[in-house]
Every structure is written in structure tokens, then in C-alpha cells.
Length: 352
Image (cartoon, rainbow, N blue to C red; front, side, top):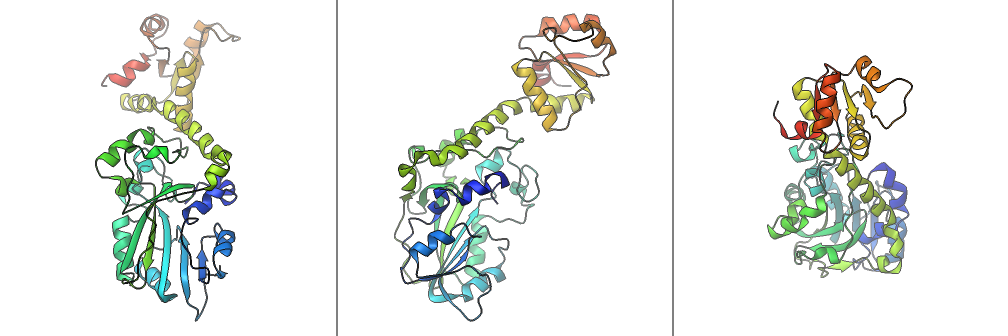
């Protein structure tokens, strides 16, 4: 499920065609298009007849294109199977619920909760389970592909016959979907995922060619690149902007353990001392996680009341010194108030 803020860009980007722009469709083929309109225009340029309605009684198709279907049940797959000709093929693309992006903290598009896809709480299924259900529905022949960065913004396609090596980022520009729960840059782990033969399990998305007749020859293409990227290098601007926002979020979330530690210590109304870069990041993380901030103190910020008066009148139950190496500042503050004072480093590394 593509993030809503990227939907318009996706439907108007040449990258959306990348998932199938390389596929050798038969020019005389009939197609049932279940891509929600994303690939309809493209399919009309490749195939003889394209139908976009979901209900087409008594008609069979050479290809069915399905992108992120809501139903992965055996019966749903069997209905698609029955809509295909004896040599027909289902081309099914979907997001991997065990993708590396979900291990890094991206929230589920179904529940809105981080890590839920990894716990199988979203009614979304793995590649292995999908393959099993397709087989039970009648699709005995299957060939699996791995679109990068994913099946929405596809720049390059690998397959079960040609997996990426450690230098695979030479072929595409990775990007990260922004989410306030992200904890690390997923791109830094890809190399180890590949080294440890976990790419097929942890890649972002899948495309499977599921054949009605298992004896039919599978698609011969094992690797492909989206040629339109070379034609227009600006088409990645929005995903790159999304990545920039994500990296900023990850930098903020380095301070998430501060919030967790405050909770363990029993504090509920923190104030922040020092409103430089770190102070602003801590404030952003608290706002993201709905932690009420009782005040922001900084001697460099002009206020109507003296700093000491604001400190005494504050309703904060703890003061966090955000300044790097702020031990001396924390000691001075303890002389001015009975409110507990901690440095960020104390909250990050000390046990309650």
C-alpha cells in the first residue's frame, strides 16, 4: 500500500511502469488489468485488448495484472486462475511484509503500528505462503522477481535466477519512506543481508509470474533496468526528497531512548534546557510520541521573565539538559531548583 502523500507522484511517474516495462507481453494478448489504473495506459501500448473491470463474465485472458490485491486467499487466486486461458499468466506484484523497511521501524499501512507486519498481525503473508497458496489455487509454474527499490518506484529488476551482489546499488538509487518511527537507515544493512543470503526474504517487494500451465516456459528475462531513468534523471527527485526527510527523522529518533528512560523513571512532564540542534531534535521526538513538554529553557533566548523565575515556576517534573557535555550546566541547575536534572547522556546510558 503506497503512502497517500506519494500517490499522485506514483501515478504520474515513469517509475510506476518499471515493474512491467521490461516484460515481453504478446502483442495480440488480452489483459485483465487490476492495477487500479496505474498501468492501464502502459498496457494499452503493449497488448491488443485491455479490460479494467474486475467482473468479466465468461471471458478469459492471456494475462492478469494484479498490484497489491486486498485478498491473498486461495479462493481469490483460484478465481483469477479460472479467468486465464490454458496458457495464461498472472503477474502479481505486492509489498513484502518482512521487508527491511519494517525491521527499521516503518509503520504498517494496515494497522499504523511499527513492527506489526513482522508479527503477522496485518493479515499479510510472506513470499513462501503466497507461493504455497498460488500452487494450491492451480498455479504450478512460478518465477519470482525482486523489484528495486520496490514495485511502486521500480528502477531495476532481479530474479530468482540472478540475485544482486554486494555492489547492487550501482544499478539503482535506494530511498526510504519517511515515518516518525524509523530507527535506522535501512540502506546500511543491505550488504549484510545479501552476504547472508537473506535478500529474497527481506527485499522490499515481489513480482511473481504465475503460470496456469506449469510446463509452459517461464519468462526468459532474469534482469532488467528501467530505461526511462536514463532518459530523465529528475524523475527520482521526490523519492530522494522523501529519503532526506527520513534521514532527518532517524537522526531525531536517536533520542527516542530518552523518552523511554523518562517513562521508566516515572517522569511525565519534562522540560528541555538548551534549544540548539539537539534540543530541537528532542522536542520533535517528544511531539511525535505525544509527550507533553512543560517548558524550554535557554539563557540565550530572550523572555519576559528572568530565567531563574521561570525555572522556579515551571511545572516540569524533570529537566533535560540537551547540550553535549552538559554535566556542569546540570550541576548548576541542581543548585537552582529541586526538580531532578539529567543530561541526555545520563538518560541514554544510565539504568534507572
